[in-house]
Length: 410
Image 1 (cartoon, helix red, strand yellow):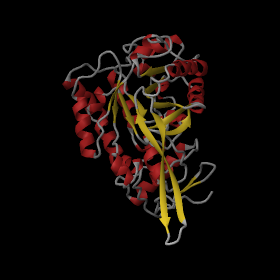
Image 2: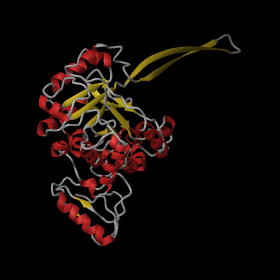
Image 3: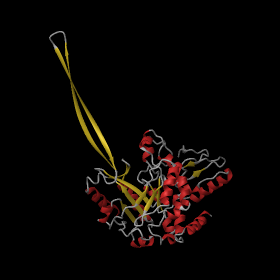
């Protein structure tokens, strides 16, 4: 395989078979979340080489970026089985369906930079350790699609096949949050303008010229929430039936968000689909769960992201449902037009390591769901695992949380 072009002074090379070759006499300087990855099962050997390189070159190397957690719930079952859905810490992916598979570095165009929020397929996100998937589903004449804003990205059918295969091969519990139904409604307006020009000469002849101009204007209005689905109420029924047809064997009936992991496991069904319309859920509780509350700050800087997350972590949380801290920055429309932020990946590079640290701190003891962009450039999965193992012994006092936090830091 051709040597990767990522920022890599150490000339680490990723081969098709998953083996890793490293020039051990050169320092590495990784500065991007587009990190070195390997598909090899021989992770311990890779870690050993990186550890040896770290000692020789006196640089820190984040080996956790090479790990996956496909069965972290099963592996830690004794620690988490008594935790309820409202109290579990689930790592998740924001705009999970807006992914671009980029195993080798590439130069994204303007469209890609602000559309793709993940660089792993749904299967890979689940294998990495995500257990909460944020879906935005658009209804199109040919099929249901996963969207990011108004941009359709992947056909829902193929994504659900990934989820089904993962559930069939593991004993993990997965939450899908069907949170938005973005659509684009376009209308076409045509106007015709006729101009008549008469030219007279000095002779008896007269010349008349008629010019007709037709202007077609296409106006597209962006709509969120249930717009589009409201205009076609049958779309919701079709989508729910689609979920039943594709995922029926795995769909868990609504049991309430105080349900524990063990109670879920005892049903034999491990897929929760939360649907962001309580009225529709009320008629379909055998297949759908009531909406999950997303806490989204719509912020543009790391400092503002911290302020927003701090406010919600110390605020009141819903008692009847799960809630998700949407731990990512969001560009504004003008910033996208002028490429002010250099893309979602660049924004994630600035915030993801901070998000990991914030939730490794005491925030982790209060977190329910934390959804991020480009999940593999964070340590949110390992952070969630550590806090879930600690939560079993936790009591709701600040001193106890501090004790647990200190034990995690050791």
